[in-house]
Image 1 (tube, rainbow, N blue to C red):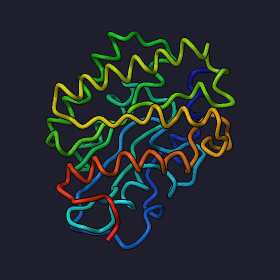
Image 2: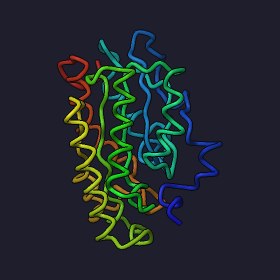
Image 3: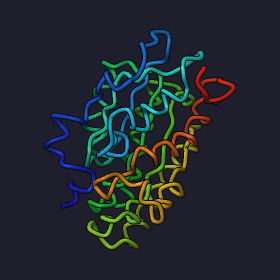
Length: 236
């Protein structure tokens, strides 16, 4: 049941979980930083078109100013926990040679009952592994949204308990990122708007819609622009 929270794993591993180069609009900028996205269904964008995934929207929002980002792979997979990211996504980084990385993980640890201590240890290992490959100012960590406010949210555990777990894991991840000088962007409050605005939930009744991801990027893009030394996050 828990793996269904973020999509059908067996389907996405062989299908939409990998980055589709055609989803990036415009000609690739060979001078842009190589960007790799890590995480779960919230990064692979379950139930939205590839162009509406938040990493794609982020690249579009930043535009072609120098430096910019080029999304070379989205390694995120539906249903992945922090341990899954370590075991299945991190090994690809050496071949992909990222120059910028994003990480969003934690909801499946909540759904699958991973203890806070184990999540904290895994998240610390993840961030340290990223720091071994790129500087702290080339990493952005994004918080987990609250799926419990969606129409299907109550199908995956007691909403109050699960929501508290999401908040807890966000606090853990934010503290770990701060201790390492890594930017953490909190979009949790934005996800709560889906309780009153159906347009912010995808057709599956569970995941964020493209419209919600636009709201995320309005908050993420200025942080990334500052990390890149950009004056703003608007396209040229």
